[in-house]
Image (tube, rainbow, N blue to C red; front, side):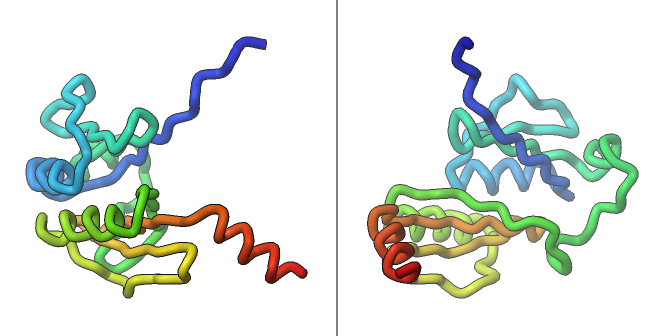
Amino acid sequence: MPDAAPKMIFVNLPVRDLPASIAFYEAVGAVRNNDFADATTQMVSFSDAIHVMLLTHERFSSFTPRKIPDAHETAQVLLALSEASRADVDATTEKALAAGGTEPNPRQDHGFMYGRSFADLDGHIWEVAWMDMEAAMATHEAAAS
């Protein structure tokens, strides 16, 4: 059997102000991909496998008849990004805050895992986390015995 292509994720987010949202995500570290862009849509990528489709409310509504909730008041998903270190978690979160985002939740420091979160301009929450996998596994094994 041939090797399957690696899976990718495309997160579709409804946004009220497409240019402002593009600027926000670029400030956080995403890269614009103009191959998938028009007046209603812009793809930005965090990696070769993690892509965010920023869609105006009108464009998003063409994919579903469901109402778009106000993410400042409700949450349907919490999105998560991994980082290589605690310092990278802080740097990404601070970039989001400097670009107009907010930090909706307190920092989480479990020793082997460290995380912070930010909400984008439309209120979508992103959790940014670093984990020492060896320490996490050791903690898990100790708790199981």
